[in-house]
Image (cartoon, helix red, strand yellow):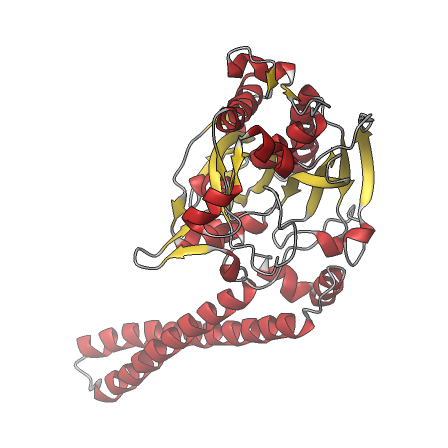
Length: 425
């Protein structure tokens, strides 16, 4: 969430920066400012009454030593105590209402983010490789997968409904090979620590990274146990150190985690209905960093390079986009999307999104660090990025490495994970 002090002291600045996201948050900000003023007035009155009670308590003690009548003062203090209790309850209600409103406010875009209303305002900052030229008509991955017998959409839907699929034989092996390849690369060459965490988390974890309360309709909830299925490992990994105070010399922390991801895809009706692109369950290798404010933007750039390295080793043509203000996620201050070229679909496809959330998530999780011994704790910056989406990478491999005879060449870096198999089909 945003710093309440920033909203209070630079109200117009916050309003104007949030407008660049394409929505008007003026009314919400005004409500927050009004509630904050009410909260501060209550605190002033409570502190004044407590000060009065302390003074009178001393006075009562002195009067009792002198055997004077303190009945009236005690009655007054009873009324003061009742008023303090009333105000304390009112303060708790006001602070809870204020917290709920703050959770609805998105992050402020970094000054380096281009202003735009939608994806048309994004800026291409890098292109790597050239799209392969085919001497035959390139097929989309769903046709390739079904022809090879490695992707089963019909039985996936039979088991769980639309937007689910199954993998078998070399399809399942290829998915597993991609996961292991990515984990090995990020741990052995990029310096991340591998971590494996639950796929089900408590509501406050979803709130900590910004999925709740705003995006509850897009998530799967296990109501009986009050647990939520993670939409990305970002949720569990970033919350790993919630409510902790870290030492500056520990930072940045760099984690990589494989997880299954679960999304309702609410509002995505009609989008990417075919294939493995927009489904309810998929695999992803996630990168998470926890850093100081001074480190975070350098760490964002290195995270993007780490994700790009995956695609370069796989020989997949890609481009990097700096997202504009109107196309960024709720929690992000700055985001790069990495898109891979899909010849069968004849389009660019997002395969990774790398974001710096600054202290937005850390405030929600109360995740802090101490700059030096004895220093006042400060909020960390948190970063996350796909390193990368596994199902989409498999789709990209199928489309980019397809051959005229309907076979698919296995990229060299994956062959050690597939017992040396060089082609599928």
